[in-house]
Length: 247
Length: 247
Image (tube, rainbow over all chains, first blue to last red; front, top):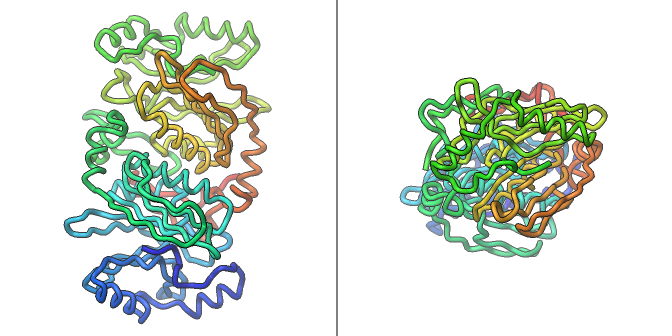
């Protein structure tokens, strides 16, 4: 698992960068993704090579996280819904993405600034994700805030949450992984390049949801028969008690 | 501003507690709230005496935060939407609450476990709250998680967020206030009773929204003309680009 746009030297947000990205953009059935899939197959691993610059059917540029299976197949892809505007040139994606690894569990994908919108993590967890993978390229001084958000996403959604940030000289590093009670599972202390090995447990996610955070708190078990929907005007929607609970 | 259920000795969650709460419950036009309003008038202050046990029209028990103006008037009330189940006997409330103090700004109310649902803070901020007041009575070992969530709510919503927890011997204390970049504005270090004096700035909330967290990040300025809605299946709703942006 690598950071956002790991294969693209797009450090300086100017017109030249956008020109370079456009020149490098390929559709997902192009040679870059095929090459990445071959690498996954050669190594026999699941591979998330960060996100890539995807050329859309209408010439759009998408920031797209891709997942390669050990069979050498593109297994999932996700277009960043919340580009970091106004700096980034990406057209926003329009759909959430979860994918399954047989015998392991369900994963949700998001990219960098997506994590600042709790709706993304909430909806990925609601769709069944036990682990949310956030590939990141944060170059700015708000990495400390982003780590608070990452941990809170793990706690509120009772999921594993992985914040995989680009290292120096491009990014501010400090990648981190949190478990479903917000417990640190692994981290890098600074911006230097490094590797984190994390053992994730879907069983632990479900145990925490059943027994509660700190043995007591169960947000995914809130609703009871007869409860009314919780109206949420910001979304012109609501939480439907009949579709909420899960463990 | 006092913690959740500050005037009620409801430490032990059993049938006797529910009986005692029912015996103490009053409608909001009862003598307890009138007495609290007189205290606010006598002192010439805005007063949030924690939350009270409200008797509903149909005999329900609500956990209701009340706000008294310096004129001695009940200025706002909010019924906890997410009681901490299964322990608490409260009927859930069904509406969000923001209120204005002329010349100061707009405030949103929430109670304890409400903070674990990012939807509550999001919707209060979307309704214009610059400061979110979370009155809390957390007695359990997940206060550290709650503080991470409080800070993340401040950061993601770019609001002031006040987590006012009950002290020992009932609660775990560690009350804290965070500004719109998640910066600590004041806190108590442990469970001992104490007072925090915080100077809050609505101007700072709007400055951070305009200039960005760490001078760069502006989640409330995300959308542009022509953007499509972001579909959020968990709410059977969406983020509507035309009603989102604010500063």
